[in-house]
Image (tube, rainbow, N blue to C red; front, side):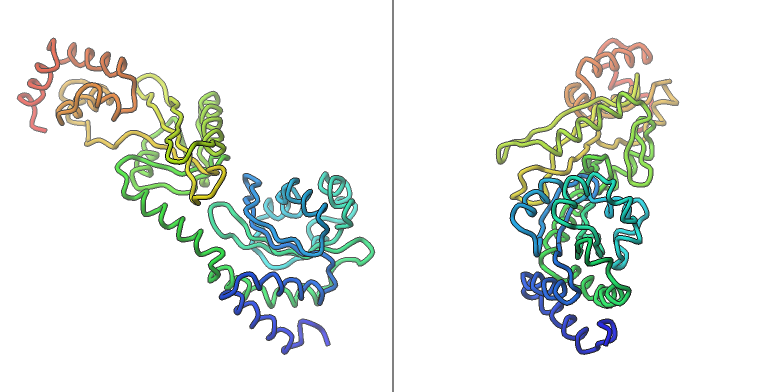
Length: 371
């Protein structure tokens, strides 16, 4: 009887998959028994970030210690099957034999095969993936050597009958629910912040953003987002942003110590400072992996001041902040500009309103227009 038609066999594995929700470590023994059943010498259960190639965890079955060490060092995202599945948007699809993605002769020409696969007799594979959080993918794969040949259609059907239950395991298991709670916590915190805040990975992919950040991005020309990817039209500024975010994603700081960098985006009167801050979702992470991009606080509409006095957007913003009782130093900080820039902007306001002091400027604004 074919494995995919054996109801008792399928029922047994389905029950064991759901039982592993309560005792997550048991999922490894489930995969180990499936590995034996489908005649696969090797199997892997691993979570990795496809963009950053960060390996969160990996359980490798059937491999010797040398293979396991070199596998982790090589970064599993470098395997050609994952790369092709990523390019074809197949990462979270059903189990599929590797030969359908990449023929053997093409596989032999890959760096992965020459560096690792050939040494450990990994030629054929069948696997699937589940997106779990923030760019991470859980992969379940089974591997064979050259002499065993490709996996059969019956094996593929059998594994795909189990796949929906693996998906439920991923949804319900505490292995992943803690990370999901962390992500929801991050979203909740971002929405409470008064400043525009975006969370990025090292490739500038947008992981999360608060409402103020969405409004801020909508009015920007020096930084844009397309298909969840941030970029700067100015090549130099884009490189600077990418370098700052990569620094933040790799930063190592002492516990409780705030570390950040600051860059300037835009030009002329539209230039402003952006803060880049390392962000760790898990307390025991050696490196943050993510970065927060923090922009200036949103201000009330500057249109009335611009129309009445012929002020630029930045000059009108400064006037609004001064009217709110802020010092010039506070204004500079809230606008994310240097104190000298704020002072020069205020002097420009003096000239347009024909006053000679900060007190006269505020008095003129208060008495001339109802804000």
